[in-house]
Length: 110
Length: 112
Image 1 (spheres, rainbow over the protein chains, first blue to last red):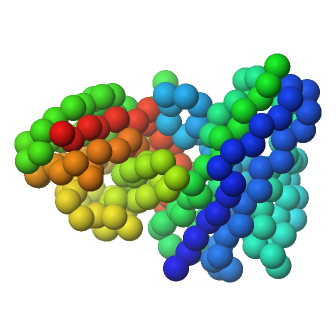
Image 2 (cartoon, rainbow over the protein chains, first blue to last red):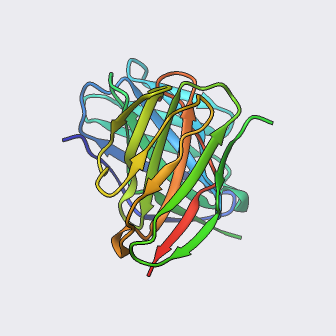
């Protein structure tokens, strides 16, 4: 069945770039998402990319999609302590279901 | 303010005691969904609803019920909770058939 995998932890220094990686299995995915979960809160949509795009940039965020390898990444430039959170990769095909990865916990050291 | 509201935020109960977690959205979204979040497993979908009186099972529906009598409300019902239903639950709604999800703040449930 469909699956989304991502590493569980990432630690970076404040001011460095963070790169969170994700792989998915469903080749019919039409949308791929990054959600952010801050402590004690629900998930918030951070950004998304259509499957026919290779890259999307939004201020400090850059999403790269390698459809051949089914690999998605999220780069956060100039990472700040406020970026500390759990980041979930998710994919959606033509149906009504969104499949989430287990989440990557980002630690930002001052 | 546009939001998805879940209640309660925290709930401790005992095995077998029926409970309901409420979810309400004020954005007139047709699509609503329930997820559970467990460490290392991410979010797994329990049930979803495409519109009033239209519900369908997600990946882990066993032990749960839902209803969608009004567009804004989508309660999650545990008729006979068991300890393996201890989890963090999220309700979400979407204006576009689940493409972009808006989440509530979560309900931490502990079943003893």
